[in-house]
Image (cartoon, rainbow, N blue to C red; front, side, top):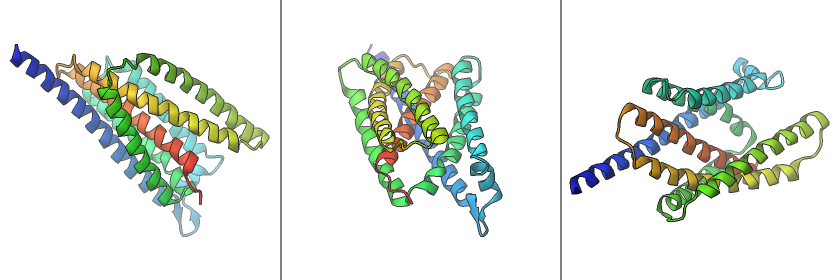
Length: 241
């Protein structure tokens, strides 16, 4: 009996460790991708050819990458049961590269000190809430449901803000601040919820390929929590160039 319990706990620990390792790898790839892209945006004459593609012509290239990210995440989520583990990993890592390319814009807009401070603050908040989610005895399922509802609201309001600013040239600075604050609250809550959910899922892991794919998708959720929390903090406190 003790051996059985020990084996279950060992598999649970491996599942959680592997999930956070995938998340950490994706963050590292995105950081390298973002920094590399930022370097290649400019040359001696100004915007390079790649920079023109990405941010010229009304940022057409940028939006192509954004759409590619959305399609890739949707495709992974929809087909995760059918695709192989290798395909799931390649899709996950490809997403981290694409997201890094779009994240390169922060190096154009914000000072490097602000980016560094936001990253450190995000790391502290993320792992604090992850620890809370993993150790609390409260069931955070209800919190997760409300946070997802709030996230839908943030997406709708963000689209409205984009339309107001882009097409009507309205000053949306206050609305932008409110969206940033709401986003911090939502992804702080989702970090705790996803961390608790990860532990509950890990209890049933047996290490086969299907569960390894679950680990990759769980890492994607945590990765998105971290990135969105980081961008929201940068949006609120970041000093622009």
